[in-house]
Amino acid sequence: MGPSALRVAGLNELIRNLGLEVEDTGNLPVPIREMHPSGDPRAKYLNQIADTCRRHATWVLRSLEDACLPLVLGGDHSIAIGTVAGVSEYYRLRGQRVGLIWVDAHADLNTPETSPSGNIHGMPLACCLGLGPRELTDIFNSVDPIPSVNAENAALVGVRKVDAREKRIVRESGLTVYTMRDIDERGLRSVMQEAIAVADRDTAGFAVTLDMDFVDPAEAPGVGTPVRGGATYREAHLVMEMLADAGRMLSLEIVEINPVLDSANKTAALGVELALSALGKKIL
Image 1 (cartoon, helix red, strand yellow):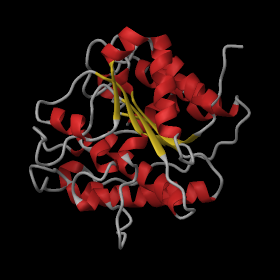
Image 2 (cartoon, rainbow, N blue to C red; image 1 turned 30 degrees about the horizontal axis):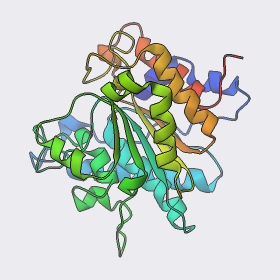
Image 3 (cartoon, rainbow, N blue to C red; image 1 turned 90 degrees about the horizontal axis):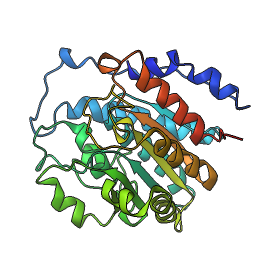
């Protein structure tokens, strides 16, 4: 329902109003969870999610081959595994690597061994860095698999809730992490300048994934796992505006919108606004 909520909020028309062409390829078919056994309790629905991410990664790869910017709508943040894998594969075939800017209240660095819930939407950043089940860290079944993104080119922005056993992975992962305290103390502009530099260092550019729970629940109530103390309305826009100004974004993803928990589609409407800022909309 998250992608539908973004469409209802006028996403396609408003992007066209920026002077851009839009091709909406519809929704990726996803198995109905209630009709399948959950499988391994440490990594629930692993086979179904891996298959979905594999098909999605192929779509992302083809979109880039068609000279399009993939704009991915979610939904569960586990879809980022496919998004980043597709972007990475496109540039790997051209002898280049990519960076990643992950904007989220949560670290998403659990593995089946550390996750308290077994929900894969708490593991996607780990999978992008090569940590986790082979089905999710090697989407294209490579002969010599490598992570979709090197930790040295990945930046996590806005984190404020980390699971107890996940903290060790965060510290040891090698990625650059900016907590909400960093933003409070240093200011968002400084943090984003550094995050962009990290993701852009010796890469073709960077993929961007925005979990709407980065924004404070007062502004974005329609998310699955809200955490108080998030970004303000203007801070969220500044993140997207700075990404647009950098001119190095290879893909954009907006995820974790749950209309059932929303109020008058408020979160999806904000998601559309943020997408427009990331695509170049300016105040003047």
